Structure formats: structure tokens, C-alpha cells
Length: 211
Image (cartoon, rainbow, N blue to C red; front, side):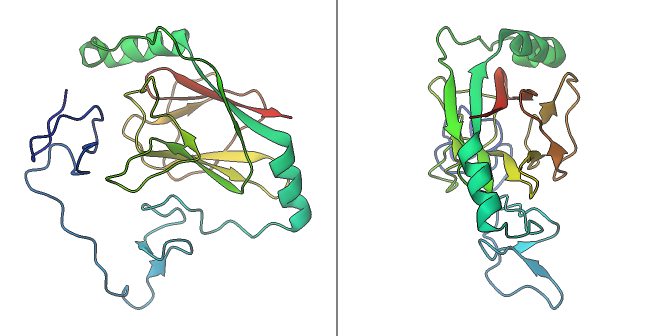
């Protein structure tokens, strides 16, 4: 089990679940800048934190997403559900790929299917963390906890045509879409049709369904 520089045991491998420090760092990370960004810099439209690209690294917000019309928003929100389940085949693939690093992981004995209504234009996927201030709409923190899921792992983004894209937010272990096990490029929207699997973490598979 990872131990942060403050001496806390953590089930996560990227940030300490207790204090939020970056695991493996020699010292606590510096506090974020609170001053205004330099001239010409970008800030997130949601949290106003300086950003470098389209997706905010702090909250995952897609700053290029146009505001949908009320008709489009209502159509998306009333017709889609994210179905989350533990998948043994994906777990076996992760253990094969990670080798000795995943040898101590166990597939959960009981992990019931969970369903999340996609009732907004952006739906965060990750783990709830009080220390980091993350509270994703699709919370994979368990029980059982999937140890391969980052606190801010990915986000589902509604398109104006009624479909959905998934965007990996720079997660530690990546996100795969479809039949391939290759991870998608971070901060790059990837189309996710109904029924196409989104694979992440040690055993989690998410599919979108029209309801």
C-alpha cells in the first residue's frame, strides 16, 4: 500500500486519500497560484483556474463545448444512462498487461451493476475525494473500490447531435474505448456509441444505453 510523505496509508496510487499529497513527491506540492493569469492566458469558464488547453486540468470542464439549446439538452438528459459493471475479462487483461505490479489485486467477490442517468452536459468519472475536492457524478470509489481509477479520471461530454464523447483527463492508468485495449489520448474527445465499452481501472467497464 502506498505511503505519502506525511505518513498516511493510501489505497490510491496517484494522490493520498487522506491529505491529497502527490504520492512519491519529496515535499508537499506548492500551493496553486491565486494571482490572475498572464496577459493572453486562458482560464476555465467553470472554476476560473488557469488552463493550458481545451479541458481544465483542475475540474475537467470542456471549455470549447457550446451551450446546447434547451431542446437538445432535454433530449440528451432523458434518453441516456451509463451502466457500470465489474468485468472479469478486463480484469484478467489488466493483470496480464501490468504483470507483477497487479499481482496483488483481486477481482471483487460482489460488485452489483450500477446505473447513472446522464442528466447534464458533462458527467465526471472518478473517485470522490474530500482532500482533493472531487465529487464525480459517476463515483467509482466503491465499495468495492477499483484501485486503478483516478480521482479525476475521465469525463463524458454531450454533443449537439445527441451523442456522447469520452475524454481521459490524464488519468494514471488511462482509458480504453471499444474492442481495443489501447488507451485513448488524454484531453481528446472520442465518440462513444451506445453499447460500446469504456474500460478503465482494474475491472470497471461502462456502457451507455438509450432509455
